[in-house]
Image (cartoon, rainbow, N blue to C red; front, top):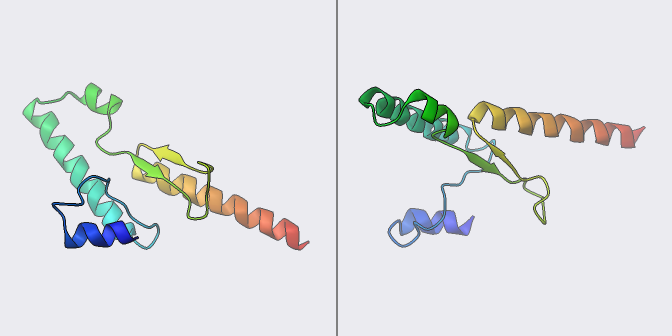
Length: 105
């Protein structure tokens, strides 16, 4: 991920693309980011900036998940919660494992 390296070296010049991670290697960083966004949202609700209903409709974080070997948009999905992302990835992995095992038979 060259852009990620450039963003780290030159943060003022490479602020045009969203935060990116590689799952599962960056699980800790993803979790920290998610928790930070949810804490900020809780503060906004407490301060009356946004209501709980508005927050439920517009989550504080959304993950655009792209598989490593995908192409032409295949396998990309949007998760509104970290747990949803982890569940979908786990489910896809389980299905791929089953397909592989069936091919071996």
